[in-house]
Length: 509
View 1 (cartoon, rainbow, N blue to C red):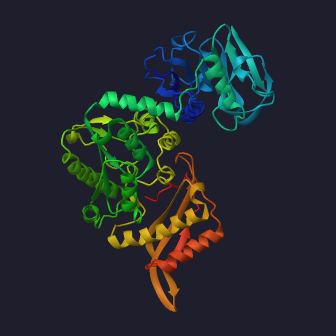
View 2: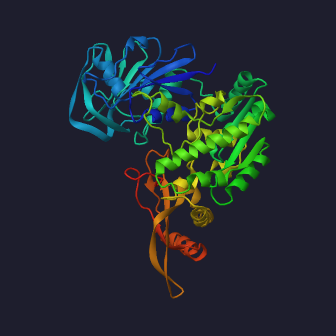
View 3: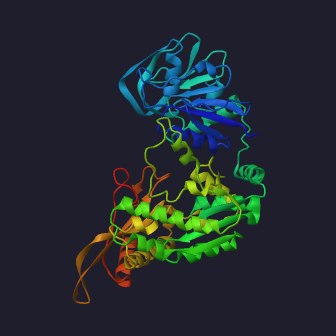
């Protein structure tokens, strides 16, 4: 059985970041809401309490029985977690005289303490809290302090229970990763054997046991998640995996043929379905963004279901669900009221009556890429920018026509090809061209024109939650603009989007 660390989430924005740092140390971990505890069996090597937007002094603050974990598992409380344990053990937590937010330095460190091994005095840490531990309970020992926070870290004497009032998971805590490694390896005894290769081995074995000789149908998108899920399933069950790749007429230029060819060279049992006319006819005259998404989702399900029914004896639906989606569905505050419909088209309709298999539902996006690399998947697929499920439909503002799609495909191809040839493609997290619902006056060949506008968008991000616009060189933007205007009939103006997320989203619809 795979050993693991359990992270109990009290609603902090940093909880997923804790998990990522733990996994970077080749230790498997799971996030669970504090109010929906998992089974704590022999595979659990330690527990981490996350931070929280709440104050421990609030009446509606998250509550948990610390005694369920204290002296039963190594326990590390981070920020709120540390304050909660102190408060509920007889200590005193009070509002800070000034909000403790940003960089600080550890002025005192118990260098002999196992949690602080190899962490130098003056080590920079990141604070983010409005309360502070004024008095620690009896039996608690201060093991680190800053100039303004006396109880930066503590241990409950005679136990493996610790609290820290800073965030080791953020990069601003320069030795945060070392602290986490000290906790995970030296204190919890984790073996650090959770690697892409070990994941592949255990996942393939598990899939074979779960699926047996049954057939699985899986919808491919050309993206990283579905591709890696497909290869894992293929390695487990071979030809019993039936992949379906739908051309909705809203893909990038030549993408359908290129991706289909890539999949066939990977040995996948894949069927391509040209459904362009079906999608475009349903979208005709529709301008509302949400309505466009719903139509695309509905038609995709219809097309996919038709194709799936042609495969006899299918029992399972394969999906490329990844861990952030799972976390979102069981969040501290309950399932999200709305899922990003522009990213998630399709899904499992009730009438299909298939069991679901999700081989990637324990992985973050960067982990999916590492597993894909270990599986030998082409870098062209692994390095592909995120692309929304509805494709160019939400990059064409207003109604969709075949003419607009063709114009945008040509402009987008020039843009992306220039990013690749200039070396900028891999420096950008996501890029694409947007067809704007406006026309502008221009002069081309001494003639007045009144034609369409293309907007270019490029952002840097880690996970898409926040994003900054990419500072592409002026020379490159000038070259791209010139090529689009000269080569794409119907375009006489190109603009560049320099807004960040928030407040602007990455996509325009």
